[in-house]
Image (cartoon, rainbow, N blue to C red):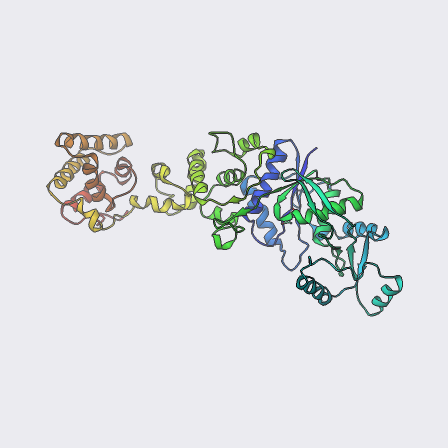
Length: 482
Ligand code: GLU
């Protein structure tokens, strides 16, 4: 049975890159009928918090992901927060200590820093120099007598470290590239690499899918698996998400967290669709995909190892597509959230639908709905449409039409616009020249929703009043508060 994990560190909001990793794991597991574990990697107490954990879980759920085991749902391999698994790590560490595969290290942070500095100055890889590697029992006792509390360090075997990666093939680290590393800190807490390996082992994780930035950690992980006598999982290190300038996606490239996109009016299905197709190409012509379609089509074997550059324009395009695919009730509920000032309008659904084709994100909705509100004083260019004899005749005709039609159905309003065009069609005027004076008279603007929708929402009386005002050279003044 395939079993994967998401292993977020709760040190901030869910980053797009981590969401992408979670998504790859989830799509792979769900596509194969496998299980998903959510594990909180909160071994850094100074940077981790419960608030961050909750916000990450909320954002993962918002994206549509779920898990079979985790801190919120429980499961047979709990607890699912690393901060609560100290006993399991210490027990595993003792096994390594007892078999000589780990040793106590008494070096102080200053001594370690000095060793690193020297290695760098001499052009060597800054790995642990091995000062405590072969201490005799007497030397250990001496250090302990000085009051030094040891950390526990893993004794890295001599030679090359290599492992198979499902995307990169055979990955090799030359002898000396991996130095002895800490598995238990002097305060008894587990080091990052050690807790990850113990958990992946005892939780029965079969596939570890994570970013390329973990490749060097994986070298340590396979050594630990071997030392502990566990079978390592299969690894796949996917490419990292880069900003448009080619550096790792970060704050200076703009919004980087899932929450920011959620609040900016992006849909979870669009964001998931976007993130999943960043280094995986769906079959020709199937770009716009809901989560269940992604599960069906996604193939982890088709991931590309090339760098992945974040492309906001493509995300916007996908979001527009997903918005237009939304179930209507869901669309109107979300629209009400993003345009609360309009939501109580009796024609709200019709208004939303009238601008749907223009929308990229839901947060643009209030701006697109503005023409349904108070008219504005036209700019000089917009006012041009109201000048001249032709404009006057068009507006007079429009006035006559709206005064003689009740405008109680959208079709009725379409007919009004049709009749207006019809009335001038023989006079060699373009449709735009017929309709612009009316649009500017009604809203003061040159752009906005379709005219039939405007007529319908504003109603006959208000339309007549605004056209009259425009004819009197007073466009932009509302006849009555809306
Ligand atoms: N907790 C790690 C992170 O947030 C992930 C570790 C892993 O996937 O092995 O980067």
